[in-house]
Amino acid sequence: MRLHFARASVLPGFGLTLGYSTAYMGLLVLLPLAVFPLWASRMDFGQFWQAVASPRVMASYRLTLGAALAGALANAVFGLVTAWVLTRYEFPGRRLADALVDIPFALPTAVSGIALTALYSKNGWIGRYLEAAGIQAAYTPLGVALALTFIGLPFVVRTLQPILEDLDPELEEAAGSLGAGKLRTFFRVVFPALLPALLTGFALAFARGVGEYGSVVFIAGNKPMHTEITSLLVLTKLEQYDYAGAAALALVMLILSFILLLVINILQWWSTRHFGEGA
Image (cartoon, rainbow, N blue to C red; front, top):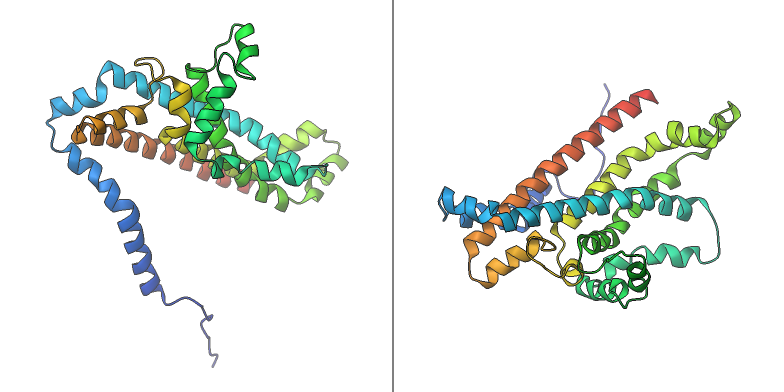
């Protein structure tokens, strides 16, 4: 007769830890989110539709989602390159460059917004050269996209770095010994292993961009129908004591974020399953 002993754990049993986790998530996440539909339910359908689908609000949706998507796509490309360089190469100042990646995490968003505005305005260090080339960055949708790219970069880099560090270099060497070139090795061997993490970083950068306010509000200029983001409209309604209207806008953005994150999670699951089976 064999005796099987359960593995010892430093945490309490499953029931207690599950209950604690559920209560913690409920109080900190679910309860605040439940306020949106409760406040929005004070409006009838006509009022709700007017609050969430007016031309000014629709323009803010397009700018917010479009700029967040542009920033996340830019970070998916350049964040991958940055993570690759920081992981695969040794060079003077590497540790400093690696630390600088986290600056958007540590820097207050209002401070980063002021800095970006000063940098990309007509008289800024970069803006003056863009202006000479006929490109205006500050107070345009381009400036919003630049701000969202700035705050989203760490999500992609920090998500990819552990995967690159754990990736066995022998796989690349084996592909090279079989006659595969560098590009073929990257796209057939390395990139499939990175794709799930890349999608995760993209999703995090996109979600952060959709809800960003501080780093955008200064560089956007906040022109209605042109450079006004949805987060600013929510704050405007709160300042006007229109809590139901603010909750309605927040509810729409919450639903859109859930839908988009669900789609990205499905893509992550598909890429993990597809490339995992292929490997």
